[in-house]
Every structure is written in C-alpha cells, then in structure tokens.
Image (cartoon, rainbow, N blue to C red; front, side, top):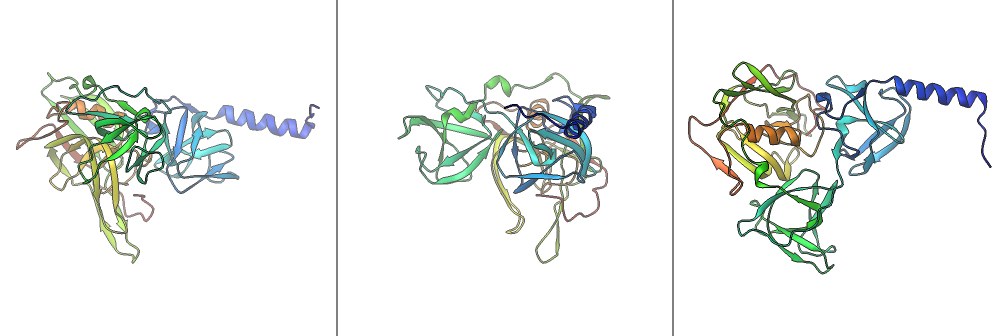
Length: 356
C-alpha cells in the first residue's frame, strides 16, 4: 500500500528540498575542497557528526565512525565548525564537515604478472587496506593503509587465499609486510617525469597566515593549492610544544617518491607509512608532502611540514627541482639546492584544537 503524505508533511519535505537546492554546490575541483571531490569518502576522525543542514547549529542526525566509507552526493558551502573551512559534504543521511572526510575511490587493479628487479612504486587505490606480516588474510596486521598512500613494491607471490600479494619495501622496518595486489595501482615512470623542465625561474611561496601555496614561473602564478602548516601542540600537562614551519627562503635539498615518516613525542607523535611526493626544503626536515590522514587544509595541523592534498603534492614534486628518476625514486643535493620555497606570514595564535 502506498502511504499518502499529509499536507503538513508535504510542505515540510518541499521546504527541505528547496533549501538544499539553494545551497551553492562546489565543482569537484574547487580549491576550497582541499582534495578533488570523488563519489566516496572515508571518515578520518574517531566520531564525526552528521547534521541536518550544513551548519553546526543543525539537528544531529547520527554519527559516523573512523574509516566508515560514505556515499558522496555533492559539496556545498555552509557555515563551518571553524572559520578556515565552510565546506560540507552531502551524504544520504545529511551533511558532514568536509575536514573530517578524505575523498577516496574504490578502484581495484588487476595484479601484475611480474615485478622489475629494482621494484616499482604504487599507490593504494581503495579506501583502505590492511598490511599484514604474511601473504595471508588472517596474518597479523602491521598497518592500515589508506587511499593515496605511496609504497615501493619489491616482489609478489600467491597467498594462501589464492590471491596475489605484494611485498612492500619499507625503509623504516627490518621486516617487510604484504598487501593485496588488487589494492595497489602501479605508478608508471611517466608519472614522475618533470613538468616544465626548461623553465629556470621557478619558485614557491607558502603563506602560513592564510594557508595557500603558489608556484611561480617568473612573475606568473602557474599553480595554487591550500595547505596545512606547522602547529603548536599542547601536551597533557598543559605545556606547549611548537612545531612551526620555519620562515624565510629555503632550497629544496632532497626528494622522495615515498617516505615512512615517524616522530614527535609520545603524546603527540606520528607513525605514517607511505607518505607520498616528499620535497624537503628546511634543515629541520620540514617538507612539502602528500597527506592522507586528514582533509583539513587552511589551518596549522602539521609537525612543521606543509601538508598538501595528494594531487597537489605530486604536481609540485614533478615541477620543482632537483629532478628525480623513477628508480631509485629519491635524490639529495648539496648547496645551492633546487627550487626555493619562501615561507611568508605570521602563524595564527595558539589553538588547542589544531589537530595532528
């Protein structure tokens, strides 16, 4: 039996539909999104609120837990929880703040029949996958690897489940780990080739006050992206620990297609395998690099680095000097180094909710 709506119910539903249609929809590549919008998203925080409208004062509908994969309808501009971001993601149940959602794809790949002797690079092409101690879906989990993580594959074999598994070459671990082959997309050598290699007057300018990074060829801005820069973290005892991105002009002195990053303190530390497209520019180890653990660009969030979305970090890696060969996928140069990175602006005041 088809249920008929009362006039009151019909008018209420109509007003909701009209209100939603009136919201400004962002194109998938709008720079305010941070990362290009996809049809799926992964929740990046422990518990994310879903609200009836794109406004913190909307009615709470439900919660989404960390690593839940969401169907994305669109991105809209509303009123943000924080002033640096007013973009919300519309999902079937309502609206969720875009800073809490990593846009992802679910694009399994046919496993490779061979691996070059020097290995190859690949990125995770599904919302997440678990790296295990053996080519066995029941083996111990070492890491959960998220969409856009970049890894070096050194070999493969058929696991006990009959599927192809890739052995990962991780420079920070004595033992390797294994990932299902269909969850890694091979990165082709032409994806690392330099962009505009004949241009000699390249420079980067990053403003840690308004959190934008621009690439210039002479006086012409050729690329622009939002970033998250170094923050000041609060320890449990209330003390402060600054991890501010160093100001001034710095040359890029080392680059890596993939890097396992570890550091920080016991309370504010990090252990991040497969950080992609890393360009070191400061003597303290600060770098421009891809970020998969948040989509929260526009405020301080890092331990001194410049966090970029994966697409932007990859473009900057290819555009800047020194140039990197696909194998070995890393280079370190002496002074005067490569492309200059100018850090401008005054970091925002301390904030005990700057994230990690």
